Picture 1 (cartoon, rainbow, N blue to C red):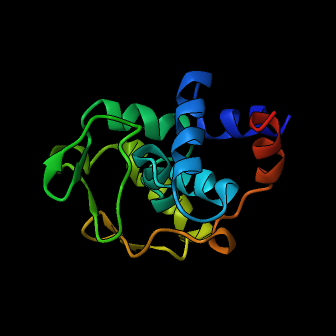
Picture 2: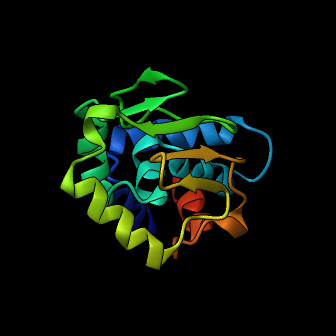
Amino acid sequence: RQKQKAKRIYGVFEKQFKRYFKNAERQKGITGENLLRILETRLDNVVYRLGFASSRNEARQLVSHNHFFVNGKRVNIPSYLVKAGDVIQVRERSQQMDRIRQALELVQQRGVAEWLNLDPERKQGVVNAIPTREQISTTIQEQLIVELYSK
């Protein structure tokens, strides 16, 4: 159940999810927290967390349609994993899109994750650090996912 919930929340299919789990297992630290960290640092999720999109699905589409730069380079892969210090910027031509403007208005009320920094005027965000478990606001019980895959 928790695995299905996580896959649905982050919009990831089984094959990719399994790959993320194997990567999380290989990393040092707690596997469940590593898995959540990987899911949170996907570009489509970061675009959503910064408030450039009103849902993760919308963020995924905006990324795949070339609306964002990461460190000055165009990236159109939603599963691209951002790193600490990366700058995510809305493309110049895309800054006037109604969807992005409305989403930015919504984020003023919702707020941005504490591991991210948003500059709404320049329509860009910075990944300050890779999030810790405490900074990830989700109801997923990652330990149950680890137990499922450990069988």
